[in-house]
Every structure is written in C-alpha cells, then in structure tokens.
Image 1 (cartoon, rainbow, N blue to C red):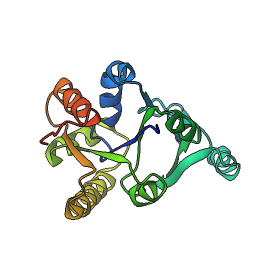
Image 2 (cartoon, helix red, strand yellow):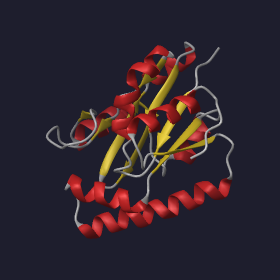
Image 3 (cartoon, rainbow, N blue to C red):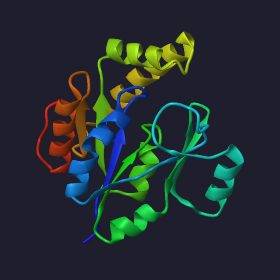
Image 4 (cartoon, rainbow, N blue to C red):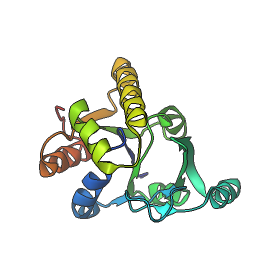
Length: 189
C-alpha cells in the first residue's frame, strides 16, 4: 500500500515551520515523515531547518535528479529530495513544506496528494513578516497581495483534497487541526 503525500502550503510567515516543529513527535507517532527541504538560502538566514546550498550546488543536484519536486520562488530555489518516492512506495506518509505556486505540478506527479493550506489573518501575517526582518515593506506588501490571489484561486477550485488550517491563534490549537486533517477528520478552518 502506498503512502500519502501531504503537502503543506501557506504564505511565508504563516508559521509552517513552527507548526511542523510543534507537531513533529505526534506526526512521527503516526508514521508520517517530515521532509527537510533543500533551499538556496544561506545557512545564516533565520528560518526553517532546511539544507542550505548555493545556487550552483542546487542546479547540479537538480540536474542529476536529486529532487522529486523543485521550484523557484521569491528569488530562491527549493527542492524536495527524491527519497520521498521510496518512502511513499514503502507505505509511509510523507509531509512536505511545499509551494502554492508549484501545487499544479505536484498534483500531476502525485494525484492523491492531501493539501493542507495554512492560513492566518492578514494583519497577523503582516506583523510576523515585519518582525522577521528579511524583507522591505514593499516586498512584504507584494507577498500579502500574492497571498490573497493564491488563496482566492485555491478556494475557487472547491477541492475536496484541500484542508484549511487557521494559524491565527494558539499554536497547539493549530497542531490539533493539522493532526485532524492528517487523520482524515473533517476540520473547520
């Protein structure tokens, strides 16, 4: 029996990494692997515990087929290691921190993907992005506008494989919603 690809998406600053860290033990208890992404961000950058590589290293890895999924967004390159295919074939569920923009290509490769959309109130999201200090106000405003467009498109599809998870409140509440989605229980955002 094949495992499920669980594809967590949401705007930058929505708390995907914090959520994954908080849920890691309970996901592991369910036999769900959380994948470490490869990103062309310097190791000094604050953020997720990803494998940071140079743009050249990423291009070389991509050329030799090291990634099951890869994309470019916000001036960075992202890759999901090819090993996920082995884990899925072995019946393990695999959770990846994905990209909303790459979702159509992911669905082509993994038609039975479970999509988890992490949402957060726009005012809360703006404050998180400002506090992070990685981008200018103009870049943050562009991210927020892009977030609205992506969310509207996803909602228009009315996709039954899309599970909404609101992360505007306490993190533990968000963890419970994530686990409910993974367990196949209906969740209201």
